[in-house]
Image (cartoon, rainbow, N blue to C red):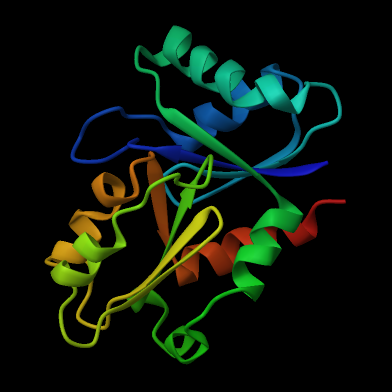
Length: 179
């Protein structure tokens, strides 16, 4: 099965340093095949035929902890789940500016999301939608100063890891290359 791992909080601000070459080797040591990474922020695509998927995120996080001294959050998606997230994008016009469109992935759908808090933090031009386990944010002015973006995790009540559209598109292309 083609699987995507999104690691949260690595190689940010000089903390939790994890070279992608080392991550690829670690995942290969765990029995994963055709391991490929995209940029330094923890985007990994691989073929998994040996490791039981339900335990894989914990196995990866623990292996990183043992070898590198920190334990990141690891969110797993199948290629089909990522394709569905792409297909359900409620802001197709935003694709022309891929850095303005962000997808925040969650391990589980939020039970009691506070969408009114997000709405009150929304600036003119920002749009958002929550669809199952993906929170979509179109922030034409960027997410660096967006109060809405800063409040996503708290308002949803579940851990999230975000990727911009360019990264999502590239990760999907990489997943499509794995047979």
